[in-house]
Length: 311
Image 1: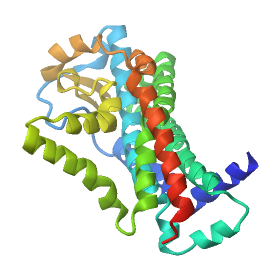
Image 2: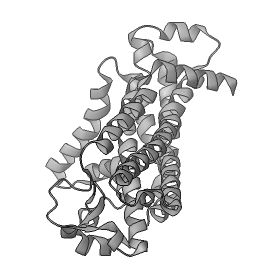
Image 3: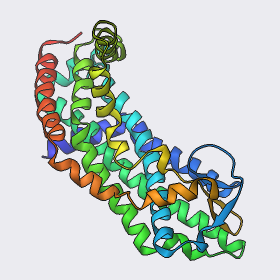
Image 4: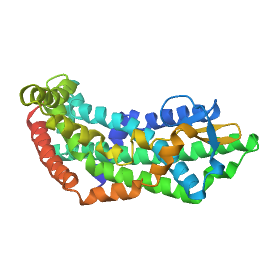
């Protein structure tokens, strides 16, 4: 256990993007909150608006919960990019600079090295994203409430325990679910990293893209493309990322407002959203657990390649 903790600490120290990126996102959110109107939802102007306080209490809670969930989603998407490139470079970098020979001289097995890198990509980065999302939600709540207080508005509106508790719960469950859902993706990228003589990005991307293009050309179908899209973005769609369910929310001065243009139909559909239930339902799906099995097979192949491939 101590060996893995040491290896994981080494990976985090050598790959500083894992902890620097959340700080950059937090800084960007702070500037966003403190400067000008804060707008959540699809890009576009707001013609008319209804103050959030004019809505029923349950609708207020649901809208604010979705705002906090959207903030967390930004952090998870950014850290997902970090995890992608970390896994892609994890087993290629030490072959490129020949440091693989040094690590093989230590009393560490190839399985230890590969599994520690997998744990960082599949577990540590989602947990860092969860912590960053929590801080981002608190940061937005603090900045937004300060602006509302200075303008004489309802500063406590953004600190309702039911909203913050629900948002934190969604963030934690999201990170745990992401560990399992994206395990085969991380393992596949590590396999490409262990195999590629150079250019691991091309070795990882071209085979699935080529298969999708060939299927489209020869069979006039898109099963491969749909499978790839679902594995990469299906988890985000569980949170109701649907144009029909988007509502613009703006914080400006003493107003926390909902855009009338989308509120009429959008708010009616918001009651259908159940982010926690959607994530929990994934745990009984075959796709999740088959992916975990595939991840194990891909990791086994990556360990074998690591053992016999040094350049």
